[in-house]
Length: 192
Length: 192
DNA sequence: TTGATAGCGTGATAAATATCACGGGTATTT
DNA sequence: AAATACCCGTGATATTTATCACGCTATCAA
Image (cartoon, chains in turn yellow, blue, cyan, green):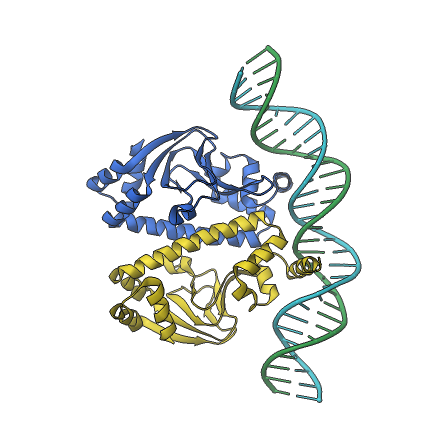
């Protein structure tokens, strides 16, 4: 299972064999079944999680029980609750698997250590975080400016790999519209 | 003008006198008048900008000319288009002043250099970015889950300093609702 | 095979919001 | 001082969206 991660790190961060060994030494491989939690609200997020195979979601639950999906993540994505991870506070969010998945976990102290000892990795992660932030800004822009149809199309073209794997209702949740509305909007513009 | 920035860096990043000198050496002080652009769509963002005094906004313009405000920034905040800054691509956004303001600009190569030579600064900026990201995630959550009234109240309590300085229409733009709706919602709940 | 569940579509209705329009007040400019 | 622009509120109306309800289909487990 580590091989996929190794390739990823080699290509993206240009790590050497020695550096990869150092990473491997702190990796924990884990299989998660569909619907299983990786992180549950109230728990503290201790891990960085890299997805080797499968699909997970990061979501919060409103007071009335409605689920709001903040992110999806598939192969070669990272997922964790950075807020809980950084602050050490209990998480407001949940992470669970939408498919049977295989992930690699790196404990926080180990991760910090890797970042210190492998500058190339630190550098890569920094760039990744920068792009995540920019992506968030763009998503906020689409939240406040796009119509439902635009949101739907934009999601479809931006994340086709996710789009074809997750149920429509979850995309609706991610976009902030009701499942029914999204269903209607999609059918309206597909018939014209 | 640099004094405010110096105090900020001393308190937040615990820089020494020597380190502060190094920072000062690359700082450019600038006064911006109300309505003046700091960054205009199509330009590349070359600077990190720290606000000593005043209030700025970061916004994009939709196809129909509507302005969508992505961020406000006041004293002791940073503002820049990180996407253009990082990629070197022309910016999709604008930054302009809502009040006569005083800012400090640090050119990208200089900033990169400071980050390398002053680890404490790098560390501080990293934490700042991490919190910005978490704030974005929380904003996305409120975008997709809050009612208009909740968005309004949340903004008011989260950013009272901004709330009382910028016109309602701009807050509406930031929240992604029309000025009229926000005006009505505010008056409805204030009369009950 | 049967029962349970998840996912999607869709009708009917209510609620929320956008849009257009206008006026009044206040600040800003000339 | 007069003219202009900005900001806010609010009415009227159209549009969009949410909500509730129901049925259909596919999948999966007992």
